[in-house]
Length: 276
Picture (cartoon, helix red, strand yellow):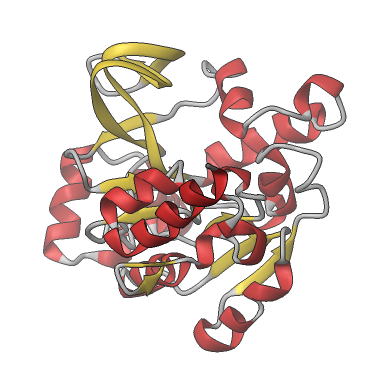
């Protein structure tokens, strides 16, 4: 076999190895063989208004709130860096100037989302579309109890938590291999989308094609990026990655934050008293 053909063969073997082969090489520390699976970067979406946290978010964007002694977005940045991911992009919009210190403190890159006030989170993906490859897509208001990030990832996935009883979350149906085959809004006793996502280069390229083609359509404006994925689910293979209860957290309201961090209880009580 010629040198060029052998090189192509080796690349093919690396790109299309089985999960068992990937796990074995990862455990052995054979990172050169895992080069096609190395994470390129992470995108943290931090542009939103966080209106459900008003009036607290009127002065401080939700990702910059201090939870259990740590600023939420800083905790996430540190976890990414501890996992060996140094190229981190923050997509900012609302009170964008308040995030600028993070560039100096952590060396992260800021990308502006000019449409944050009039569009849903698909606009943050659009703002980052040129740097997407083997990329983590993260929400700045997620709180991870342990470090969920890795420097090498086998395939595209969406993190999921389990709901006992009924839920209004985006519930997942999967095949025997964990491939997501359907997403429904609401369900019961179901795994649902919660937390970070990982896209490999093929997924990123395909998703950006769909996003660019549909971005200016009126119906796209208020869609989550997940809704665009759902429209093209057969062309965008995404697997489930299940996490035990409590590992991935999201605070949808000040009340939920108080349940996790009691230091916010006096603030909530003050708000309730003022409304009476």
